[in-house]
Image 1 (cartoon, rainbow over the protein chains, first blue to last red):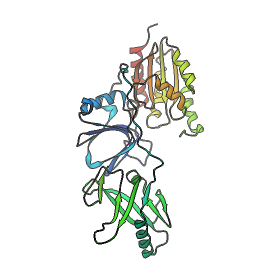
Image 2 (image 1 turned 45 degrees about the vertical axis):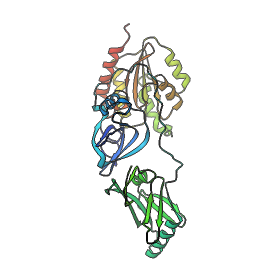
Image 3 (image 1 turned 45 degrees about the horizontal axis):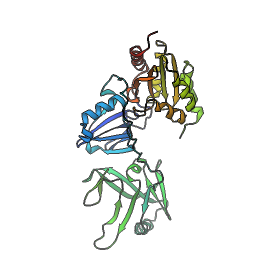
Image 4 (image 1 turned 180 degrees about the vertical axis):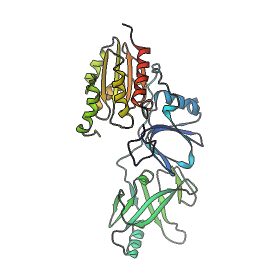
Length: 222
Length: 140
């Protein structure tokens, strides 16, 4: 029995262990996966050795009882992923309930529905407005997105485009910003700036989701 | 956000038609859990087709072979008060739905989390449940 959603990957809805090439291991319900990222819902993360538990010990415990979620959703860059395993296959037999123990503190979910999806500084708005006018194409807007690659895992995409089916539309003064739904995961809360002058970098993304940004500022990881 | 009741109703009925008592309030859960003698089976139902679509027929199939003293269900995402109360009786276990709990004399003795349900066919789920029930049932 697989997914009931034909637009999602075969692991959609399945609780998986995503082991990384680094010290982190994630457990969560797979929402989707592609060449860019593995997206988990209701996920937990463990760092090897944290609380005296190795990755293997953490996975063993997760396989028995599941995990307490730390994230409503999280995207793990594909470049960091070492393996994806169904949690139900880690230990096939359901086991007895645990001995009563201290109830772990439930971490707060990371989602912040009130947070603005994207924002543009005055400088960025002025420059976008100028470029849109220059192109003179009715209905055109600014498309922001992410794609795999770049020195830090993901690269930003910025272009002028028409609205496409399924896009999230963010009205900004007299023009629209378009985002495909997957990119909203990575770009929520982002501020686009435009830096002028000889030392200016042009459009600059300030991304609160990025844990690492490369020196050129054109790629990031989350 | 709860799903429209018209969508959920058949999912409720799939279990209630098999004799599973539906608990919609915290008080109903407390009443169910207050009866401690014997074996109780509690199903945390959910809308999720990927897992609950197998869990419900799995439970129905299992109930053809096993006879717990009490069988009830709460519906995750719909009857939130009842579900929270039900989960308070298994507070050491991370919440997941669908999931299935077996209590013996009021004590949680077996738990089938969502990840042991998803991707499995009803026959396998039923087989696991029967095995767990037989290992934990109170002798009569």
